[in-house]
Amino acid sequence: MKKIEEANNKALEKILSAQPFLIDLKQAKEVMPVFKGHKKILLHAGPPIQWEHMCGPMRGAVIGAILYEGWVDEEKSALELAEKGEIAFFPCHNHSAVGPMAGIISPSMPVWVVKEKTSGNFSFATLNEGLGKVLRYGAYSKEVINRLHWMEKKLFPVLKEALAIKGEINLKILMAQALQMGDECHNRNKAATSLFIREVAPSIIKTSATKEEKAQVLEFINQNDHFFLNLSMAACKATMDTAEGIPYSTIITAMARNGTEFGIRISGLAGKWFTAQANFVEGLYFPGYSKAEAARDLGDSAITETAGLGGFAMAAAPAIVQFVGGSLKEAINFTLQMYEITVRENQAFQIPALNFRGTPTGIDLRRIIETNILPIINTGIAHKEAGIGQIGAGLVRPPLQCFEEALIAFSKSL
Image 1 (cartoon, rainbow, N blue to C red):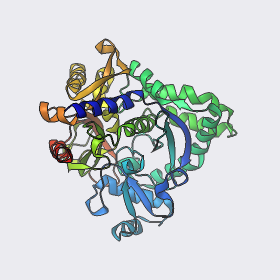
Image 2: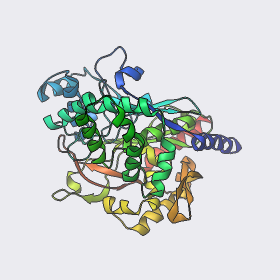
Image 3: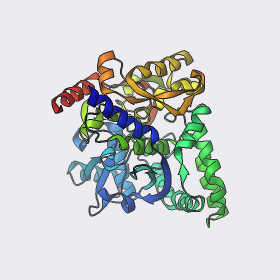
Image 4: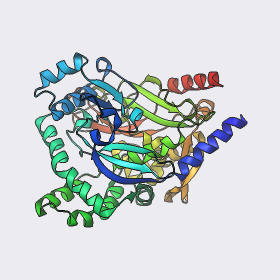
C-alpha cells in the first residue's frame, strides 16, 4: 500500500506540475513518426479497433479521410480499400495524439504540436472543423472534404506563420483563465476560443496572407466556439503522458472510446488497454433525432476528464447544462462527486462556484472500485450511421467492467 501511495503521489506531482505549450503547426506526416515509410495509415479515437468492428460514424470518417487524401476518388472505392485491409489503423493515444469523436488523423492533416516543458514529451491533435456535418462525426460529403482541403491549404499556412510570429503559447494559463470565465474545456470552449483569438489575432494580421485570407481565418475561428477543444485535448494528453509508466501507480492516464468499446490506461501498466462495451450517452437531441439513432460513446475527448476538466469541472461551467442536459445543481454535484475518486485538487484550475477549489484530479482506479462511483463525461452524440453527423450532446459514464479488469491485472502485476 505504501508503494502505491508513493507512486500515485509521484504521478500527481508530474500531472500538476506539467506545462503544456503550443509550439507549432505541421502536417501529421512531417512530425508524427507513425506516418513515416507507409502511405496508407490512419489513426483513430479510442482503444485499438479494426474496420470490421468500427461503428458507423468512424467508418464514415475513414471514408472521408481516404477521399481527402486522394487515395481513391469515390466512396465505393474507399470502402473497398478499407475492407481489403489495405489501410493500417492505430489508436491516436498510442502515438502521442488525440482526436475528438471518430478522431481520424491522416498523413496530410495539419496538427497542433504541443510540448510539455517539464518532461519534453509532445502531443498532437488536428484542427477543429466546427459543428454540423464534419468528418469527426462521420460525415464525408463533398462539402466536408472541401472544408478539410481549405483547412490544409489556407487555414494551416496562415496559423502556422502567425504562431511563428507570436511564439509559443502557454495552454495551461489559457485553460485556467477559461475556467474562471465559464468553460470546462471539453464541451464548452467559448471563453478559451476567445482567449486564443486574442493571443493570435495580432500575429495573423502580420502574416504575408492576403487581407481576404486573414479575414477568412479569423471568421472561421470566431464562428466555431469549439475551436479550442482540440488544443485543450492536446494539452491534457501531453499532461497525462507525464504520468505514464510509474510502477505501482493506480492513476488512470487515459479514457477513450471508439464507438464500440470504452478503454482505459493505467500509469503502472503502461501501454495496456482495458476495454468493455461503450455505453450510450444520455442527453439532449437535436430536433428530429432520438436515442434510437445514436451511436455508442465515441472519442478521445475524455482525456479532458482524465486530467480533471470536462465533466469533472462542470461546476465551473453552469451554461453547459443547456447543451448536455441536467441542472446547475446537478453540474455542481457531479464535480463534488468526482472528488471521491481522485487523489488531489489542481490549484491551477480553480472553480469559482466552489470557493475557488481546485478541480478533482488524478483518478484512482482503486477508489472507483471502492466507492462504485464512475467518472462522469460530458460529450457529443453522433448518429449511428455514417455520413449524418452530430445529433445531440449529453452525459455518460464508462462501463465498470474495464476498471475491474484493470484492477485484477494490476493486482497480478504486484
